[in-house]
Image (cartoon, rainbow, N blue to C red; front, side):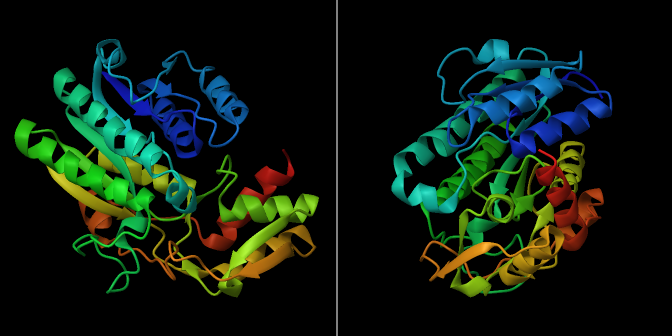
Length: 314
């Protein structure tokens, strides 16, 4: 280990967990985040406050779309974990220009800064949504991924290809990580586990697409973080990796698990899935396992219990 790791999106769900893990293993970490109001900036500030207990962590409120200021952001940085993004499939349908500005333009700014700083490895967060409905299952990294169903995955696929162009033109090492349905403590409020937990504790209504007859490869955040660190430590030119649990779970079963933990029923209403939603996701994780030992440890049952305990204690 040498130099500083820059984490973009450091105040967010996955970003704050990645920062924690890097600090716990002795790294010096610089975090940037614009504290976007897509969900509560207060939650993001609380994440940052916890990280600032570490003397080796520094934070700068900074937007990846900025044209200026990058020289000071990447000073002393030799590795970057680029997590900053506008996430959410359905929201992107209504705000495509915002998603392009953050996820495409912002990524180009990060790539350019990485080249200028001479970083030796960049990890780029992508999404399983790039696969669309998929023609083969489970999803493998060598599938075309050229039929995204919404602007969000389209912008992430564009970012992947831009990163490849920077690898070719500038020799930048990039590991693209396609995350599959990440959940856990500090999870985003718009994600299904958090919406269900809110319903179970407070009675709010939660929408379940297609009566819960959809499958997602739910992946606990600590397993995702282990994959991020594994990829960060393994520069191999340009590579794409799936990071999932490898065990797709029916949405209706996630509801049943959380209802059992809460001892009550969620206030669920069902509606047909919009065209932007895939029916099922599932990761072939053999490539990440072979390249850096990726090996998910947390089952959905265990992970949901850990998540529920965190949420109920808030």
